[in-house]
Length: 147
Length: 404
Image 1 (cartoon, chains in turn red, yellow):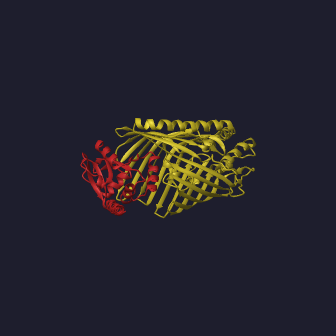
Image 2 (image 1 turned 90 degrees about the vertical axis):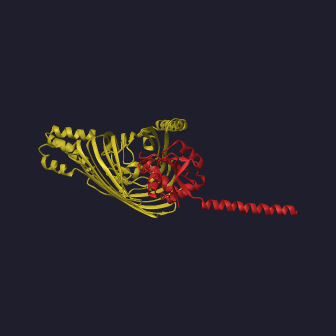
Image 3 (image 1 turned 90 degrees about the horizontal axis):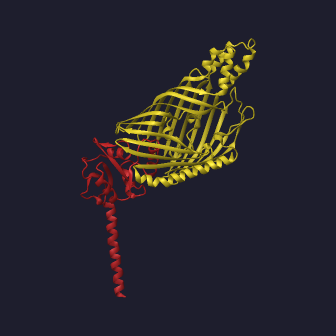
């Protein structure tokens, strides 16, 4: 009986610690805009990022770029667009619909995870993307941290 | 008739099915992207108008029975990147009014010069109106369809070239489209089937906008021919009675047509207001000028939008020509010409239409791909010389608009 109680306590403590880690992880981690390691870009501004992700420009400081997108049901998609393009998923869908069906622009390629994006970046030097800061490693170059 | 419709519908469904079967394999094969949109729109003519001669007029072609045909449609679009700045876009659309047969709406090759410009060559949309670029995409606007008083014109696409030039001035985006092309189409003149030929159509559309405010101006001209059997017979009759001098001013034969349009849109988080004004003229023909405009405004509450639209249309036939003809011809001397002069008067007078339309509507976005809409529209006709219109027709419509 006593042993069982102890076990309970241990489980609770572990769970608390674990959730604290997850919780703090969620608040601390930021979203970053990254390019392929070989990209000659060194940085990007909010305004440039907005124009790139709204398909208005295909170049940053003279360098051709190809933006990548995340599934519009993800949190990272929502927070990135809230801060960069100032549009929600509905507005973005309508916006791109107008561009796609008037034959004016191609929508960005959509990826399901940071790992998939990093894999894509390793093969596409023009590609730029937004990923969770915790996914940054030496295969990508950080262009901007979104505060 | 029914059998034919049934067969065509089945063919259309079959085509879509086959398309969806080959889409996945093609998508993997090339850098090919498929998108589509559809509107399932139904309506009931809640009241009709009676025209001269007892003919019934239903607003937007919905009679008293629930009907899905006049405005329902499904479209599929494929874009393929060909590399080195080249791409190809094709859009096929199946409309209820065309027995749901698939028709190529546009197909063009694009060359992208980079950020500042791109050129499209092929069958392209003529950017006459604010919503021309996505005219058929119901999901892209708040109404079931953009105001008919303004948007109903015989010219919509051309075979030609479209050059787009984009610039950024601070927070403002400027976009200039230069278009040149020609086309042929079918239309109704005074209610009878006719053909149109539009040559040397050229002009520009310029828009300037920021994140919430935009302006647009359009100018196009073209050499327009509107061919109709009845109109031709009247012209032949006038010639036979030595009134040939009038024929040129009556027929629409390679005559200069001009289109002007201006529009604005204010789009804020919780409300919007926008308006458009257009004018069409066709020199030396039975057509005088068509002037129309609308003003629309709406309130947004989360996923719901409530809106109100006022449209005005004022079309005139070439009255100056008619007055000239009537003033010159002495029908007592030439009684045989009366039927042709009368015919010319009928064609010119039947161009005349004056109406105001009000639309009250609601849109609810179920999710980012599906929107439900409900519009109630009522048209108030002013009776003209040619038409005595008794009541004000109204129609209730609903629609499911999707984008995929």
